[in-house]
Length: 180
Ligand code: S3P
Image 1 (spheres, rainbow, N blue to C red):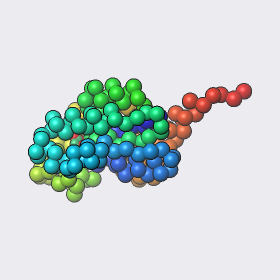
Image 2 (image 1 turned 90 degrees about the vertical axis):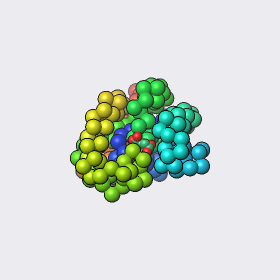
Image 3 (image 1 turned 180 degrees about the horizontal axis):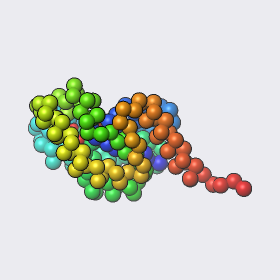
Image 4 (image 1 turned 180 degrees about the vertical axis):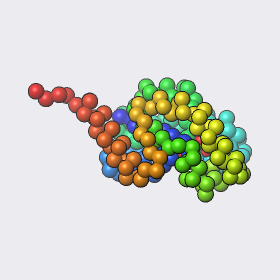
């Protein structure tokens, strides 16, 4: 089974995914790191030299390379599910959880973390808030197609992990034969 974590930049997909994998014994994959390993370059370098379209193609290839034979938690990039073909792939190959955080709270999180992210680098404070509000509104129709949404504004990682574990338990229980 694959469980894809989706949501905006900064919502915690990678750190939560890694900890969920430790707790469950699932394997862990992170599409951003897979792209960087394949390219031998960082995401900002890929955007700067090859452009966003090339990055998106590599991101789609990384997503498709993850096997659904074992049990894997996948941290996706913030833009991954916003490509309808990626969204369809994820629906066909696993379950997904949207880690939902409001734009104003994401701004607080991303305020000090913009330089590592090419979509945010160089934006001033006002532009950053505007970008997050506009882009989150554009992306929510995709994110909310996840099989579950967890409202995580202001929540601790522990709260988020516990809720995802509860959801995973419900999924695996649904797969178990019922005893009579
Ligand atoms: C992006 C999010 C990033 C990374 C790239 C583009 C986006 O991933 O894939 O910088 O378009 O939202 P994170 O959500 O892990 O930061």
